[in-house]
Length: 51
Image (cartoon, one colour):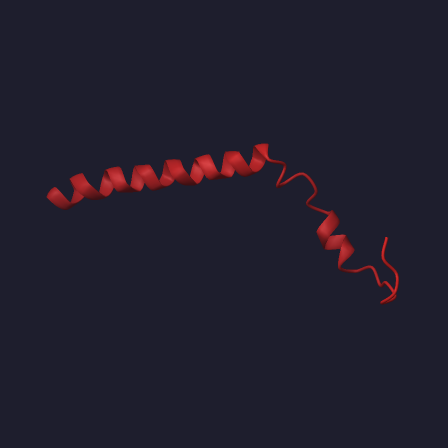
């Protein structure tokens, strides 16, 4: 029973930290362009071409 009293607050704390990190990344624009990186890998560019 003592282990549950220790593990439940630790699990809640880690869950809240994870949720906070997710919202921090969401607010920072981390998930704005989901298609860009996936499409960029398919474009063939010459080695000398750089935009």
